[in-house]
Structure formats: C-alpha cells, structure tokens
Image 1 (cartoon, rainbow, N blue to C red):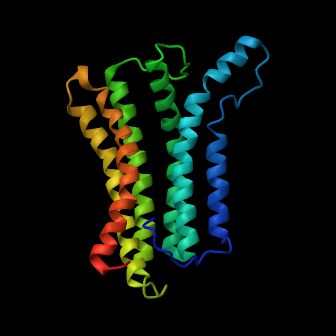
Image 2: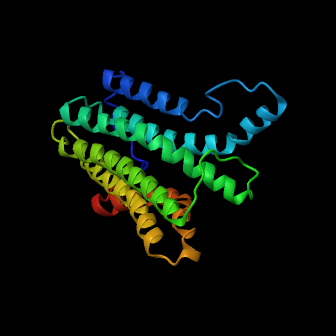
Length: 232
C-alpha cells in the first residue's frame, strides 16, 4: 500500500473469493495443534500446548497469503478465467505447502529450544534437512509468484479497470514487490546447497530478513510513485 486511495471494485464478495476463503480456512485447520484427538491427560495437554508457537507461526504465514489475495480481490474484483486459474493454483500450492510449513516451524522451534518444543518430524541427515528447506523454498516462491501473477494480470487489465496512472504504476510495482519477496525462497535454496555444512543453518534464517525488508517495501513503492508521476 503506497498511501494513495484506490477504488474498491470488489465490494461484494465473488464466488471466487468465497471459495478462496474456505480453502484458506481449511488449510489453517490442518495446522491445528491437536487435530487428531483431545488430550486426555495433563502431560498430553502440555505436549499439545508446546506445539502452539509452531502453529501460531505457521498460521501467520498462511494469513499473509490469505490477506494478500483478499486485498487483491477487494481492489480489482476480477473473476475472469486467468484470475480463476491463478487463484486455484494458489489454493493448490497452499494445500501442498501447509505440511512443509508446519514441519519447518516445528523443527525450528525444536532446535532453538534444545528439544523442549516438540517436533513430530524427525530429520535423520543433513541431506534430508536440505531437501526440507528446498521444498519450503519452492512453496514460498510459488505462493509469492502467484500473488505477483495476480497483480500482473490486474495491471494487464488496467484499461478495462480504468486505472488512473498512479494505480497502474502501483499495481505494477506490487507485482514486482512480490517477485522480490519470492526471491528469498530461491536464495534459501541456493544457500542450503552451496554453504559449508557448518553454515547450512543460515539458509532458512534468510527469511527473517523479510521482517526488516517487508516494512520498507511500501515506503519504496510510495516514493517511486511520487517520483514517477509527481503525485502528492
């Protein structure tokens, strides 16, 4: 968001947005800390609650992509064939991505807590760790790439949507911004396969840079719009 006020073309929920919301809700349910059975003892309850941080972190990532799609739908209200196909692809990747996502956070919290936080997934070799980071990176890149594709498609429909120059430029920059975020997934993959083994743990840590870079992206976008169009 660059600070400019753009039209809200999707004021009424489309069937596509409703389907996407239901799919994201189902993906969130799959992350539940105790989905198989209700704990029957105090120890089982504590064990289930120890999985809460991994659940919360995984859910936060899912919500980031849900909100990105919701914001796109709200701004453009598109329900044409490319929008449907891109949304269905997004949902498909989310459903596949949810397991590597939960495993990555469970393993991460298990490692940093020296085993106090539980992990249901056992990593038995460095090769398996590298494959897990690769699968997570591919999923992250695909999800960001699909959000970028949705904004790119909206930009191609700028004449149909009668976009003002500011909105057209912002839409294009939003697409590029998501591609930039997607590159962190590729960077993690490259690092995990090229770094010496003692530094391999740095690879998944590159995602933490998004906490620094993320808030800067809207600022850069707003300045780019003003510089390009002289907007106030």
